[in-house]
Length: 276
Image (cartoon, rainbow, N blue to C red; front, side, top):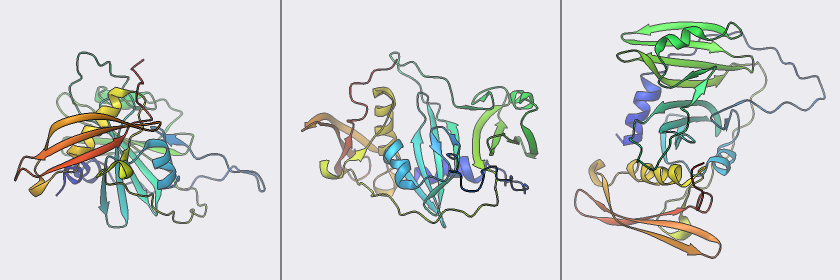
């Protein structure tokens, strides 16, 4: 089992309660009018194609197939949290965030943690009970020490808050669209995958600043272990410039067997962007 599969088992497999059966929302779009843009969570728009997602977020840092479903992993903008995007038919179906709990360096100032309906990751568990009455409570379930509460927001998103630990805190937030009864969009083609083995096939990283960008590079390497799921160790890092584009090259050595390979990242999007 890969590291991403382990993370997904924690985040998506054992944590998220089954979605309740909810009456479809009525359509408020008049006949002949342009449909409003679907709502988004963590910068990810529900129903958008995997290609549109990659154009906005960059190449996924990890992928995991679960039957007909595909999960992409990204780092949340401005904080040490991972965003898991679940794709069905090549389109965004669910988005989940959970903390990574990586220590920040002294030079880093992490942004506010991801939140929904005024509740943030790491908030005391009781915070989920203070969601305003404008949001409909769908269900609350208990599984051992884990409690999950699902709320439906006016924008048509159902948010699930997972609460656990000692003391109880919000450990993850999951979001998906409440069914509307509308005809679903057709399946979308998959984006072009990059291996990172060369500059021509570099992993494209999109990030708000260099701190998140560098974390994304190392998370990608971590989620792509070498032989026998062993870890890579960085031997050397080099900055390269080709034309108007900037690249990071990480030379890695496997902790088992000593095999070596480079990982190339296209960092043009965030190169030179300092934390605000």
